[in-house]
Image 1: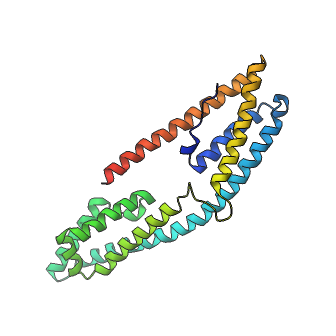
Image 2: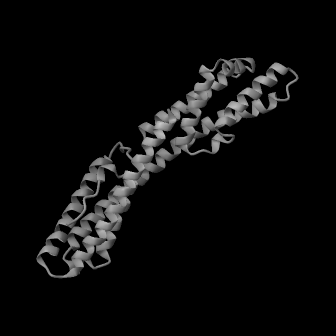
Image 3: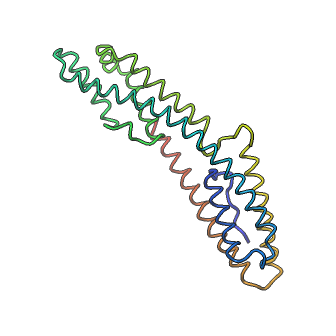
Length: 242
């Protein structure tokens, strides 16, 4: 009996990796001798086709996100440099305003630009929300004539987040080739291969098919547990961000 993979929860990278491991389990035991050569060859071909499209998409999207991420990095780094300079301003009011805004930034992280994509998005969202809603912070921005720069930070972060969600690197659709369709083809090939394995395990007394089933089940459990754990972590992360 084969454990069913929760394919719909697998990211594209996980999906490709999982099927590659399944393919390797069979290849190591000689598909020809196992009478699984046609099914193995078809699965290999479809995995390769999906992997090629996926890599092209990742390269394109990564460049877009890097450009947008750099924009918001420049904004927060620039604001911080200006604030650090104002700490030494001869006007005490401006000194205090700079210290108040710097403290607000430091409460989140002194090096926001070094955070990963998701954490940085949440951090900057919370920071700019403070600047729009906390009277003292908003007044400090006005005092230092940083309202436009604060708006640039907010807009650049929102633009990054919108693009990230629209072009999620794990579920993006290519304009010419639909990755979902490719996934479906690979699943069909996987199902065909595993059905043959189950049939031979049932009809023949050889332990080789049973061992293949055991290895695939162990692999499936590992990946199913992985995505379940990730879903739990994601829910907790969202809760903490509100």
